[in-house]
Image (cartoon, rainbow, N blue to C red; front, side):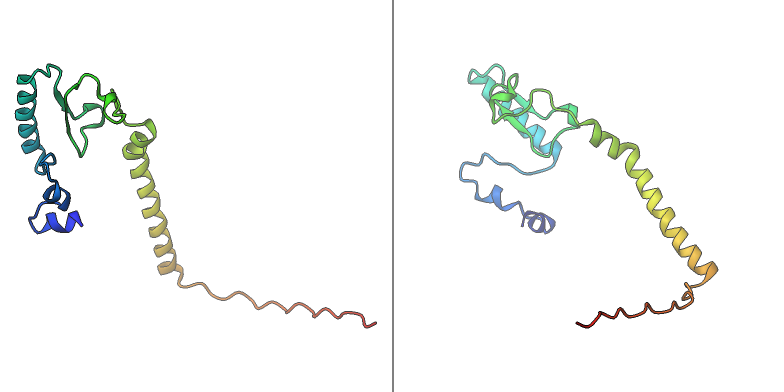
Length: 138
């Protein structure tokens, strides 16, 4: 898979297999430089609204697009014009996740400390077995 190839210094298979060379892989800074060159080329060929789609509302994306009409990203397979992170995700990554991790750590600590202080649970007094039901004979 891609992560295996990248881990040993190779480029992802999709980049290697792309016949047109439209896919490029590298660091974010390298990709922005490559995109700037491509945008300059597109503008010289008459695409005045060419630009890079890397929206700041989501702190960037893992994929950047050079668009002919960067002012209208919705034209390109429904890319959102003004993407944003949902409040639920922001809440989870903000305060809820650390609180949940603290609660899990506290539960583990409580279980460990209770067992080490009180010792393992002792069996309770054995209960009398339930009497067997006898069905009337007919």
